[in-house]
Length: 88
Image (tube, rainbow, N blue to C red):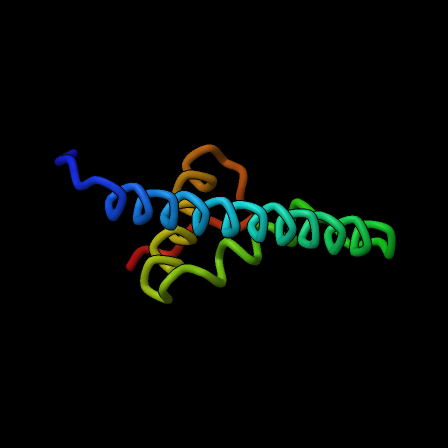
């Protein structure tokens, strides 16, 4: 880093403080999310499945379809699907 005196020091301090504030906010958000999962689990929902649904919802439609196709292909190859995949 080039030496910039008090101006560079103030800028660095500003960056560090902003990151620290965001880290605190992130920790609070993660605690909130954990609480929601606990609440859902307490009412009978399967948290592992909920996490999978959230993961799938983040994916683009094409990516999700490809992942589902690959999973079905692998399960079929292992004899784990009740119905074999139709030849396309």
